[in-house]
Length: 212
Ligand code: NAP
Image (tube, rainbow, N blue to C red; front, top):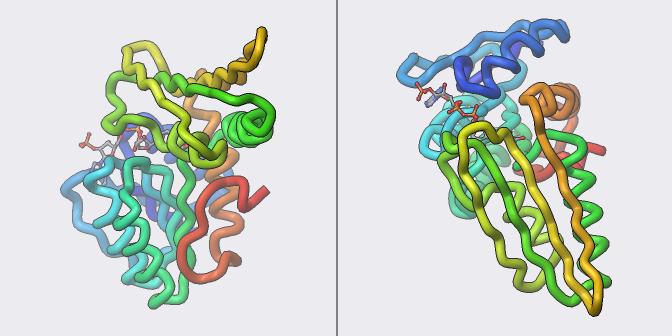
């Protein structure tokens, strides 16, 4: 596929540039401030910043190019806007807060465990360069678990992306933890999304779970 990658030089983007090409895609990367013409691409992928992602997605969707978005921090209003534009253009816009398979399983297990424990809290830990807090994964996990689930955010150098869900009951706790130790963890999920995005219905699809 001919893929337009927003965020070419970012921590995730630079891994994707190499990995998508190795998987046989023809990848053109865009960095901040560069002109964008999405015409002729089969799909766009965005791993940029909360302030850049909406403009990039609008540029791609307006050219009729389906999007795969990994950037976190999009507001409900921002997502609704992209949904409307994608529907108008009759293309799909796929958004996932976490492209790592283990993280998707962690969210599923946490949702299941929440049905049996009265209280839970989430600790999410990320690199100090991450711009948004709480993380998109923590917000998605809390939503899946239902009720009030407090989220604590840690930002430190040396971390990649980690999350602990601690559930407490009478005389016991259950901890479910996922660690991303390298950004290669996101590659299989992005490749899967690229493979499937053109077959998705027009508009927004959220979460890797929808593709598994
Ligand atoms: P990063 O290292 O800061 O990379 C972001 C890159 O985007 C930078 O190279 C930045 O360039 C570039 N950029 C900024 N504005 C741009 C624009 N308008 N067009 C094109 N490129 C632009 O961040 P990261 O760690 O790679 O993470 C990127 C995003 O993905 C974050 O929102 C993060 O939370 C999210 N993320 C999601 C997942 C997932 O599985 N969904 C996994 C990891 C990270 P400058 O430095 O020049 O501004």
